[in-house]
Image (cartoon, rainbow, N blue to C red; front, side, top):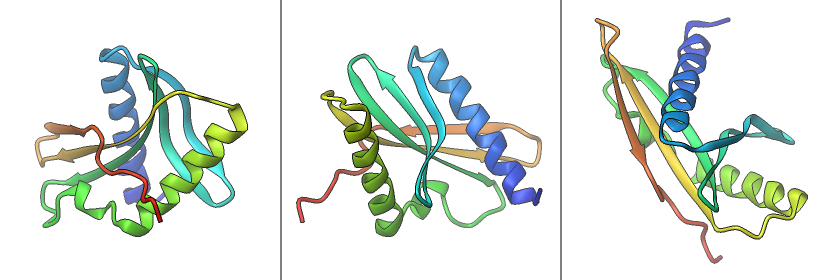
Length: 122
């Protein structure tokens, strides 16, 4: 496995532990719908939360959350719509980003951005 895949898997594990500590119920991890993937699907009270996890080393010049561009948002929205329809959820839905930066001393900074983006009405 390439080191960027290892870093991504580490970040997703850190995000899972973080959400569990905040009393989220984890419904799915790495949920696939066609070629679109949602890193974590969880429940926060009655809200279904679709979480994109982005992990970077501190030497990276771009904050991890910046990389969730409109294209990635559309993929997540499409997959979320498929998930909600497939399992017939009638709950509120939210899209979050968990950005993790790991420095050279292996210290981790976690930023949880709730309601990071909203589905477009177009």
